[in-house]
Length: 267
Ligand SMILES: [Zn+2]
Ligand SMILES: [Zn+2]
Figure 1 (tube, rainbow, N blue to C red):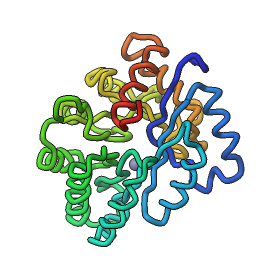
Figure 2: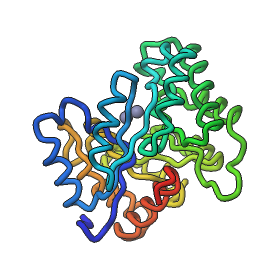
Figure 3: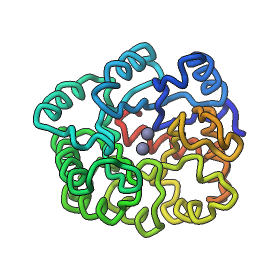
Figure 4: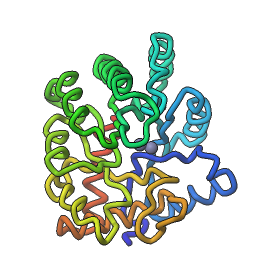
C-alpha cells in the first residue's frame, strides 16, 4: 500500500449511510491514514440531500457532494424536482449532479421512464455546467445512445462532462465514454483475482480517463469481501491498477487524483 505519501481521491462514497452511524469519525480517520485526502459524498434522492449537505459542510477541507436522483427513483423526476435540484446545486459544495442513470438489472422503474428522466437530467448537467455522476447497470447500449444525443465533444479546456461510475461494461463501452468526455470509475471489483476482464477495461482506457472510487459501503475490494466497504480501500484499488498499467501506486494516485480534480472542478 502506498500509505500517506500518496494523495488519493475517493470520488464516490455514501458515508451518510446509517451503516456508518456507529463509527463514522473512525472511518474518516482510517481514510486519512490511508492517504485518502478527498472524497465526494453522493446523495441519491431528495430525502438524503439535507443529510449529505450537512456532512460535507462540516468537512470543508476534504469533502464535497453530488446531489441527484438514483435510477431507482427515476419516476420522481418531475418539473418541481428539477426546480429544486437547480436551486440546490448552486451551493459551492455541490460539485456534480448524481447519481443519475439507468439500472435495468435491479431498478424498479420501467426502462422508458428511466431513459426519459436521464435525458432531462443530463440536459440539466450540460445546461447548468455541472458534471454528471452516472450509474449504469445492464444498460450500456441505451446509455451510449443518450450520451451521444445530449453531449457534444467537450469544448477546449474541459476534459470531462462527467463520470460513468462503478464501470462494469465492455472495453468498447469504456472507450466510447472516454472518447465522449467521460471519466471511468474504478472500484473494488477491479481487485478481484478473477476479474481480468475489468482490468482489461482499465488497460484500454488508461490512467488519463480513470478515477478511483469505493462506493462505500458497497463494493468491497478483495480484502474486505462480504464486509462493509470504506474509503481506506482506495489504495488497494490503486495497487490493482498499478499492476495493470505497469506503474507505481504513487503515480496512479497522482494521475487519478488530477483527473478527479479536473472532473469536479476541485483542483
Ligand atoms: Zn451507483
Ligand atoms: Zn453510489
